[in-house]
Length: 460
Image 1 (cartoon, one colour):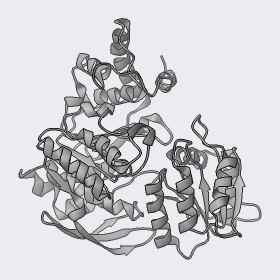
Image 2 (cartoon, helix red, strand yellow):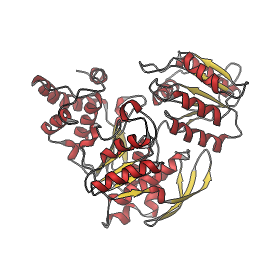
Image 3 (cartoon, one colour):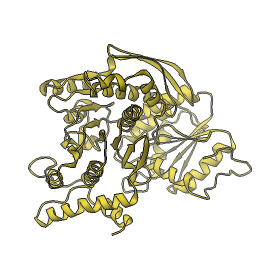
Image 4 (tube, one colour):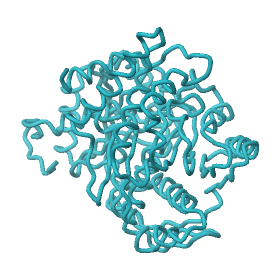
């Protein structure tokens, strides 16, 4: 079997399978036969609606700055499935290689085949990739592994972990058909990762969600630390850096800088990561090393995460905002940073999202010169024409031009060329799948970056 065949196999596994008598029963059987690789290293477990990936990357960056070797499992990927599994060893970060991916895939497949031959159900897509990550990390000399949930928390594949600390990021209305249609129900699902006696650090953004987390933590005897009690001030905010200071009863830092996270919402994620690292080491002597001023500052400065207000040159910004709460934070950052610039938007969204609310927020908070709507290249994408009609209902400025085209490549080339020619900024949002597709386009050799009658100054 080749790497490509392994990837095809994985993507043809159903996303959801019928469960056994208990959640993750099929997965636990597979993991047990492989020696429970997910228990090989101390872990950090992260759930939430928005900010999971960024918070995971912040924690990783701080731990690496302190000299630790770290594995990290995130989702979804933007371009290649390998992005979901990475390690930092001796300060060097790398994704799982194609050869390693294939070897790990086959290790898991041997056990899965054995289980299915006994009449047991095949594990789901996410369970399979999670199992691969655990097997891969188990063979590495790592100090910590960070696992991000895929969907929810209580019934997520990663919830077989017994972590050192749990983290719950901001909560909003997303995946409502699976998790519930109100904040309390969704908070309950996310809080399902809380384990007896394991501290949980959280910053949900909603008092009603906080109460659910606190109640569940109390039931399980878990210390609950709410980062909402942390005070911070933004000292400087530009399109290149964010400078902020933070203080609470545990620590105080002045002039922390984010160089590659030029979005206001990243400050909240950075603070969650600070708390998580502080709690991770308890009262041990190692806490002083990890939480030292120079270690934290270096860690935050080196933070980097694709597809979150990611700038490509001076005319293109990609952000994976894909639900109403994320769109609110997206518009907040644009108004703070680009209030004087002429802006356009390229938008695409999945049909299972609250796209009407997303369109309403975008049109209420921002004025676009051009609005480009395309269709995601998967079975969940809403058609561009239908989405364009929804935007037209909410657009307040009659001068905004709306373009709809199911051909992403052609529409993006038009949108980007127009932005460069007019010295505007093109923002792309609505889906991480859209961001990944655009990254593939702009990174492809021979991509046309020259607008009609103009020269492109951007260098990708």
